[in-house]
Amino acid sequence: MLTITLFGDSIGRGVTFDDARGRYVYLKEGFDKLLGKDSQVQIDNRSRFGALAQEGLQEFEALDALDTDAVAIQYGGNDCTPDWKAAARDPQTMHPARVPLREFEAVLTRFVQGVRRLSKQAVLVTPPPLVAERFVPWVSKGLDAGAILRYLGDVHHVYRWQEQYALAVHKVARLTQSKLFDLRAFFLEERDLGSLYCVDGMHPNQKGHQLIAQAAQLMLPQLMSQPS
Image 1 (cartoon, rainbow, N blue to C red):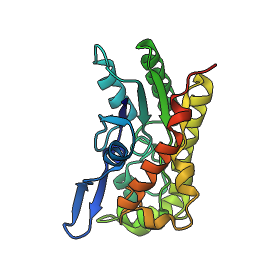
Image 2 (cartoon, rainbow, N blue to C red; image 1 turned 180 degrees about the vertical axis):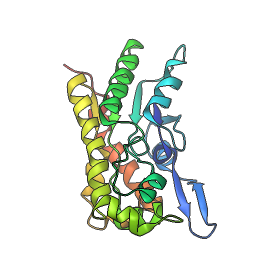
Image 3 (cartoon, helix red, strand yellow; image 1 turned 60 degrees about the horizontal axis):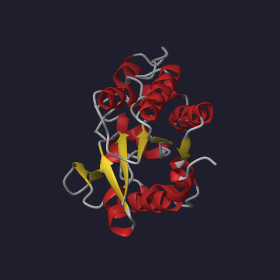
Image 4 (tube, one colour; image 1 turned 60 degrees about the vertical axis):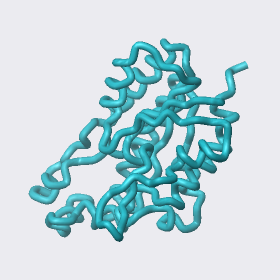
């Protein structure tokens, strides 16, 4: 049995929005549960709702040992988020991400280095894309939606902004010669991207998690292979 320890955010945790209940819930069959049923892999899921890469790194560094074959690192969605309330109040001013891009890259690099010190395989995971047409109205709830749109310039700016953080994951994987699970690419291959997400345009739904499980299953041999 192969064990992969996952440090990530709410996407890794299997959070989605339940329309009937009107709140966020944990999927009973998130990708980790699906993988556990259909393959010889167990996911030790340490992902947390709202987590930043720095918080995941701190949790990882607090461990004395880790009984696992690989450590997957899945962040970016919260790190790239600006202060939407501030943007609504003052759309003319630049409002930085919670974690600046270069700092995000530095944290991922330290994370990879820490994993290697434990002689484990590090796997960097790109964040899935946003469905901007849903995401912008969602984060605008209770705020001045017009001001937020003026701040963005156009609704698809959030997609491009988040994409910088996905590209940063690529960059760190390349510079550290780490394994890369380009989850984003699997989502972008889908013709109907919106069908993979809940109403907020950010969290994958059950169908989205089925895609994540299928993508992980497909990529596992490559991700777990050792360099020759």
